[in-house]
Length: 206
Length: 85
Image 1 (cartoon, rainbow over the protein chains, first blue to last red):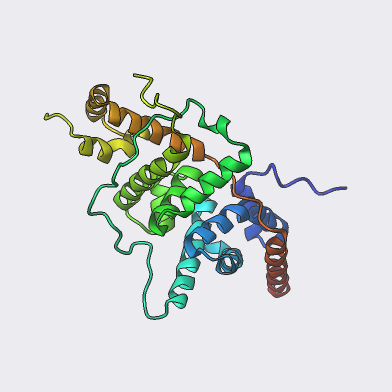
Image 2 (image 1 turned 90 degrees about the vertical axis):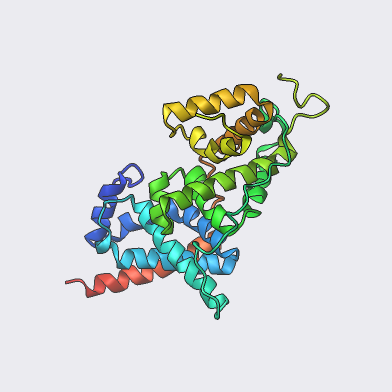
């Protein structure tokens, strides 16, 4: 008899089974989230080797401390928190004399300058192939400052709530909101260079 | 309530797009947008920015990275299971 597929099982049951010491459900949880955790680790550390270490350490720690996972939050929020802590430790070790935190002072004094104001094509996605579009979106996110980047990825790409993002990153809700606003405005600015309506009809909708 | 400036508008934009503003402030923003083409464009293109990123899947994890992750985990799981009664 073949073992039943784990892909359709909901997360709470997987966590419960994994907690009983079963290795297969835990591997399924890893499979579900490894890509997102690796992406986030790369965004925080900006270094592939460190990101790979963070990925391994995150799932090792999660497995080790699974009994401490309360189930009040999503499993993903819990492992993001572990991953972010591991990533920050890496950064601290890299700059031994300087402590690093995602909460470090960032430029909040001035509003993001809006230089580029132009309407976009109705369907900017149609102008590029999937690969080209993916590269444009990736490059734009990479160019954000790290404190904005993690917030944006968790909130708008992974679609966590504001509260979950705050919990995962150890930030206050207002800090998440203000970083998200800045990240969105900066990305809007960058993407406008690619997606703005061509020719002199940038304001043709009016 | 005084009229919104463009700066006020930008400050509230994120929450406007997330639809998490009080009706009264939301109405103020709508009013501002109907009179300020620049803010309308910024709101529209920011909305499209959020939409285009939503749910973007990560690149598949490189196979060598995944192989090392799974090897490390299997080792750890085997060690834990040896310890269990």
